[in-house]
Image 1 (cartoon, one colour):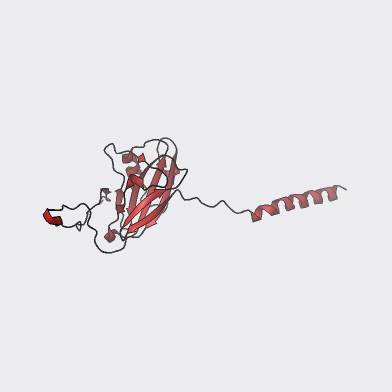
Image 2 (cartoon, rainbow, N blue to C red; image 1 turned 60 degrees about the horizontal axis):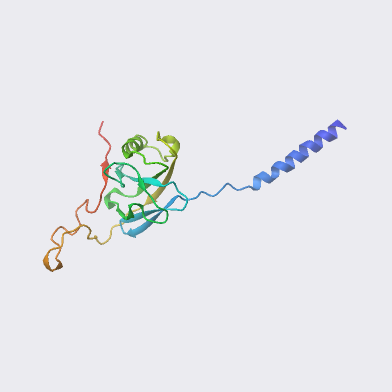
Length: 188
């Protein structure tokens, strides 16, 4: 009788665990999306339900790290769901190739300098998570990719003279229209 009881117990437990094989892991929910606004420009749009503050960094294939949300206080900014971050589009230099866009969502305004330093220290990692960072409060990290393409040069931030004639380089300078802090690797 003991054998039958043991056998029935093992079969019941086995049947209970069999249903676990069919369970699918929860789908990853995107915290933000990249919207292409031109050949080399993009907007970052947070999705609903994210923490209220964010900051953006890009890391190019060549190792150049850029802080895109640069403010006077050098802290994260308010990011409203469904609206472009900083209400602007960001230009990615074509010559630097594909970039990884790091969006750091937080429940409080975080100093960007420490994030930039930590991101620089983690530059060789394939993936950066909130657990890799030493930051206060709750932090979520979303990593997206953007591939800039060559296209017709855009005229942004140019000086227009009399009769509507553009009097500067027409926004074609190498860094035209970018408001970013560039952090480049130091030579050892």
